[in-house]
Length: 142
Length: 142
DNA sequence: CCCATTAGTTATCATTTGTTAACTAAATAG
DNA sequence: CTATTTAGTTAACAAATGATAACTAATGGG
Image 1 (tube, each protein chain N blue to C red):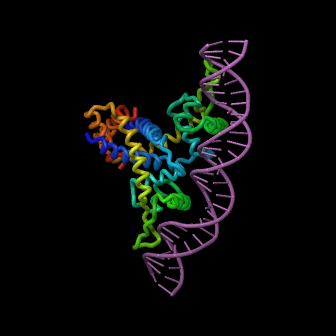
Image 2 (cartoon, helix red, strand yellow; image 1 turned 45 degrees about the vertical axis):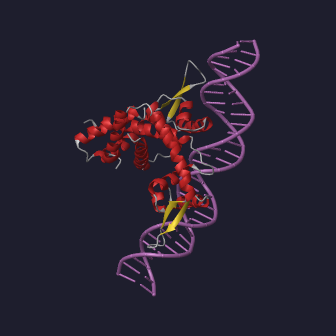
Image 3 (tube, protein in one colour; image 1 turned 45 degrees about the horizontal axis):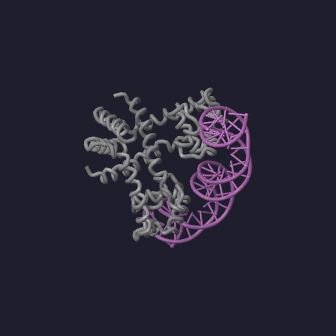
């Protein structure tokens, strides 16, 4: 097994993934939301409930910057704090009703783009793709 | 084949890919190079020769911004313009000697991180991973 | 009870990135 | 030959993001 060749493939692959996901999300424009704020929203959506520290760590933002951006999202009523009764320094962050509606809309649009991309694949190809995702997810990106 | 379920998996997967590649590149710090400039360098590295318009389009930067950042990279002697003799408005952009040395160093570091991640996989698992990458690359991210 | 630590806040400032308009120079179409 | 289009440049400004320091308030160990 040539591990260096595998690395080359990996580089090309991740670069394609970034390219495609960028293209898919590119057109999605939410008013009064910056790029970083969108990333935070997306992170909350798939990982809620999350703490501010988790946002900070996973998105490579400093705590002060995370705090500032979250504040704006809360002001826009897209997410909210739920104070942890066990440790009142902490709080969990969740989407609000509004935020959920918004992100559902975003993900529906994303899914349309996704379905468009796979529309020419046969059922057995789809099965292969599904398998491939599972393998990479468990073996490499775990 | 449940295409909506596949979409869910896709979302989780791409989010993992971003997470992992972010973590892998996070520690890589090049002096006097900003994030966007690094992305440009990376793009040139894997796609050279490229035109300014290609940089602009693929990285979702405006032409003026691309021009400005490229100028800085050229001033740092990391890349250079090679004017197209067929169309003198255009030019190809390549890494310089310096730029190549630098990016080789970066990719060596990346490869170390990569090898670290796969070190516990058996040969047959590596084979599976390679196959999975190929499938996704050809079927989906083409 | 005191001290250190943890989790987050606020303010301020520097740097990076985005946007727009007005521009040049080369190519191409009529 | 002129008019338009293409590819890129420059400048000036606005907005977003990053970094740092000084802070509060709650927790936990001894």
